[in-house]
Image (cartoon, rainbow, N blue to C red; front, side, top):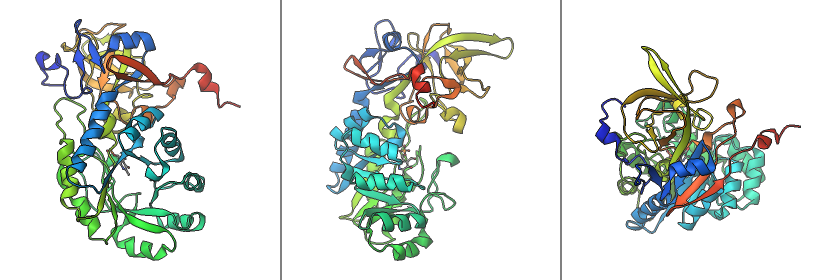
Length: 416
Ligand SMILES: Cc1ncc(COP(=O)(O)O)c(C=O)c1O
């Protein structure tokens, strides 16, 4: 993090979960729990969440809508972090679920989300997944292609659907997480919409959906979605997707949830039910990943490598699309030792933070990477046959494991 002063770094910034602080010994506390103690008790790597952070953001979405309209639904984009406990937590706050596979639907139902409050997305849902969703009584299927209209007419006549369209709005984000532009594998081109409507015979078309991308800071393109969709016809539902950015590094200042909701609603016609699908902005800053430093290797005249006990298997985002993160030692925030934080995998590209500054890192230190609550657990793999980390929820000083660490036996469970 070039330009960071030691004083800046010594504080717990807005990148960390709400309520995080440095305790008496200068150790990070998340959800009231000392993370060095958590690392001792549960081992590392571990995903640690402040439950109350997720709850606070969920309420901010619900309250911001409620203040403006009765006609809304906040739908959690569960691809960001699908696990039973988070579905339970969000369902209790009145939040619905966006699922993009049979597996996400299974977990949502297991977490107590009513099937009628689930929206099934995806550009290539299989026939088995569609049948499973219909058998479970799924509320809406977000139809993505002509092939899918044909498939659903055959297997689920009368099913309630939305049509996903690519509204031709480009968002200011990494091209790999842009989805609203015309050249996209997702949804129908606006010009193809009349043909899609023609093919619908028995399905009950309830509205349109668009999702223009992720990690979007500029509210202008998000504000335009409702206007573009409402010009395409009168429908009871408009689903405007997700995409609100979060702060991964302290120099990032995403819009407030209230301003985002205001932007979404500003161009929506009266009486229409407006849906949005936050993923990252509900859970991203709620989670941190704990690692243990194993090796500190100085390559003279080049750099210092700090190797931790995880890496691209628990967080592939830096390698997939250059995602930037910060890092701190859990008991010594700040510091000025320039280093590169790398994982333990057999790839030179297994770099979690290319340019970090830490307080004289040593083997045995607990290292924390904040803002890993979204798309980390969700994208984790068993590369190098590592056991995927546990998920630990913390609230008011109590920690509970909601997903356990994998065991070696788990790794062989599917072998025949
Ligand atoms: C259809 C849809 N809705 C919502 C989201 C959530 O996006 P975000 O996590 O940026 O809010 C995604 C992310 O890919 C998506 O594809």
